[in-house]
Length: 341
Image (cartoon, rainbow, N blue to C red; front, side):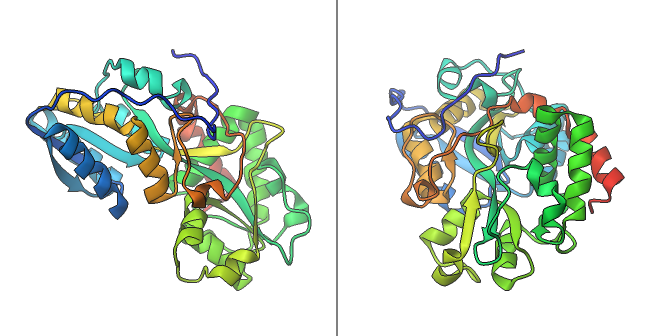
């Protein structure tokens, strides 16, 4: 098992650039559930640098994993890219990824953001933080545990338990505080719901604007995106009334959601796949994750886009995400037990 290391996510210095590799020939078959148009730049730059043509299949993560399972040894997939540790771990458990050795990835990606068996690596992150209506809330919760405080009864909005962000957050709370404490937290959290769980992260922010919610939880990149460009229901006036807290800064730190990938178990273009993974860890690609999609780079020291930097400095939770993923079954039991729909 790898040892967990703490990575300073928002460091001012620039990481050492990866030396350019020789131009390669051939193709790369990419299965991706990342649905961001801004990723086009990642693909075109890689092709320009290496001469490797990227062929893409895009669908949701479960569909791609099921497809890779069905294709078996005949699968054309070289890389699986997806969002959230739970999905990466699901792919590993399904046997559709393989372990790889890469000195570049080992040196660039913090150990806590790598699979213990090198089957997946994280390339970008989003902090899952607390947002609140500054008009109605004068004492916002400063950590996740406080969200279960009866003082916030009827004030909190969140996504459903079927969402991977909900699952990974509860799994991290189990890892940091224990299963018994996590169960009590989940019950208190459900008791404080302002409405039944519904919608995506942007809808949790819109709930603050509409007055349905006083407090909500969302990944940072949804809010940072609204700071950078117009988002329906989140204009400048609305954003000015929303405050935010990076939780647990005196404890474990802010929970992080991961976007990452791994080399397919039967990759026909394995060397090209490893080269692409290493490219995603380069300064160039890491900066684009931030500038293009308002995410936090996984590599320490890479500069942030203005919209992300505007949220401020914070300390992330450096818990080993491999260990968090092991708690997903226990999290599902707790969801059922407390009635978190």
